[in-house]
Length: 289
Image 1 (cartoon, rainbow, N blue to C red):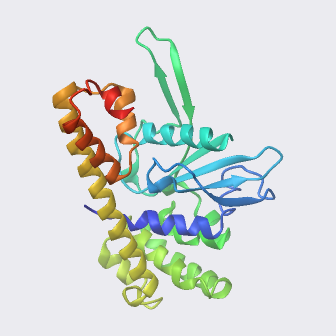
Image 2 (image 1 turned 90 degrees about the vertical axis):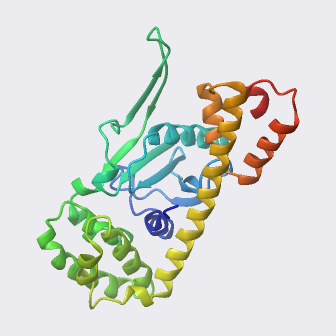
Image 3 (image 1 turned 30 degrees about the vertical axis):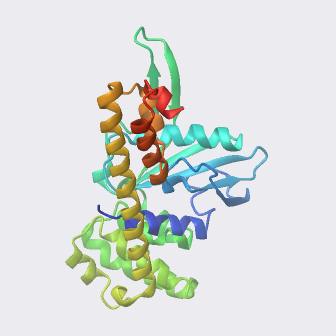
């Protein structure tokens, strides 16, 4: 199972400076912003923390960074938004930040519609999409220090990247010496979404030796652990799906979504054992009740 260090790196930037993206999201930057626990244990770690904006009417902001293509991404975001809304009883603005062109899709248009066969609408879900490679680099170079590591992924020509790294170095070393290690590690990892490993090594040569950085090693270690946990969940869910489909047939959408929402290996295994031992279970709804 491939691990994803980009998720670890990008989220740490936001959690350390939660107001960094407010201006870009057209949210009043003077409103206080807090990082809070999501409080939705059935969802993946991608939504383990969200931002609470304490403006005149409080609301939540769920920022989702995406590095690669995921077929069912919008339905997952929709599910998380509904769960967050229900758990906290606050409106939720979901912001999908695409870190690379590989994560892009024409279907990511900011709207997700559901309707019954006769055309009657049942749900309309809206979300924001930020395609980083189309973004003005100056906002990321001159804005919050937490956004500086994202600058190489913006609309910058590859030939201009050495100059960008010099500007990044001037700001990071001058304004955030105590956080410089983490900011440079994030910059190094994120640049790998655009450039080859060799090009990244050359680009950041002389800045810091990333591979000797304790922060770099910590991020890779956390990514491996997260990847192993995610792999166990996927395998347990796949096995349960095979067993239950053999017995009950293909799941309906509600059952499939409920199964997808289970992120605990122990619970998935317990459901499998329950289905094997309890012959009175006759349907997906019985199993997942």
